[in-house]
Image (cartoon, rainbow, N blue to C red; front, side, top):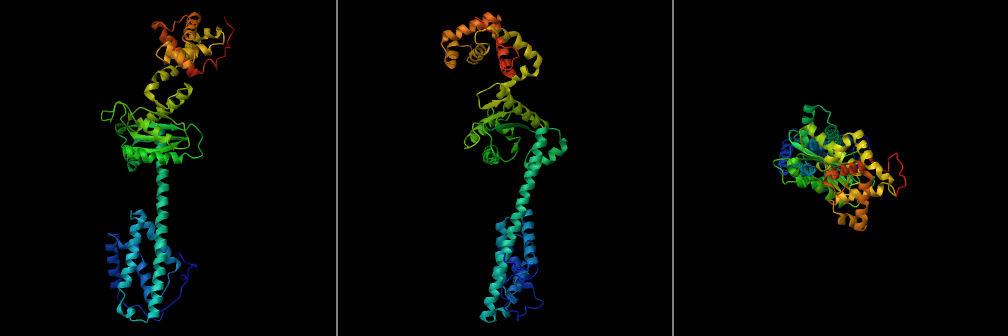
Length: 423
């Protein structure tokens, strides 16, 4: 925009000022507006505002627009954006209007000398240039404000949905513009980067495109919370277990999120936890809490799997709910292992690997990089010290539960008892 004075005309030659515009007949401007609207695909001529009189003044008097006129065009650009008219359609309207005004000029204007016509053309071109630029700027400003408002509304909605304490009827109304039907079952996936990121926005943007393409643009939200990527999706679309219209027998939301985030250069290795599908608005908060608990549990249990499903952690959740009982179980069953040479830790690790391998000593030995004889010797020491035989099905459950409890408690590292020397 070439504005040089606050309220004065935009700089340029004031040519042709001795030529008066046609008096009382503005029908040609109305025709130009109607034809420009048709040229632009039916965009309302109301968005032209005072643009046509500006063009007429430029063509007939050589007048250049003042700042207030150009600012008025900016307002029209904002209005067009707010009413869903694209910037391309608006610019088409303005350029078509200029072409129509020039072609519809009354004959008296066409009879002027060449110098006056050239001056008028110059003034018209500057009006078009300044007006189109101002319209586009106004349109962009409104668009940015709309994006910021939508992001704020989305962030607040996600916060309230995950917290689960907002009024239900209010949540339903706020969720509708984002395509969420809170009467249906949804599930939540949380993705945690393996390394600290300065900004997690890039991961969110990349993932959102893939998630929307896979599951559709309704009942899907991708956001961030507390340094985690949050994905909310309709359970029926993700194939979550327990949904009658799911796409598969196992959910694939976690697999999709992990696969796409692992392609990014930063943040790897990612860990993804997926809550179970629950119906209703408060079911979203429940699924979110399950996913958060899944991330916490995976770290405490030192699980090496990158995708954690809540249903796979139900045993751990049961064990962790009664902390005093869990401490009693671990201390009662495993405390005697402190008497072993080297302490309890090697024997607890052997038991954990043995149970993870389906109680197959050869597989456990390979994973521990020990001989089979060394593994069986350690299992015998467990039997001798605790009175529970890992190879006896009747004792195995108690030992396995105690070993899982030890992982949850960080035992024996956090044990108050110090290992004593043993044979």
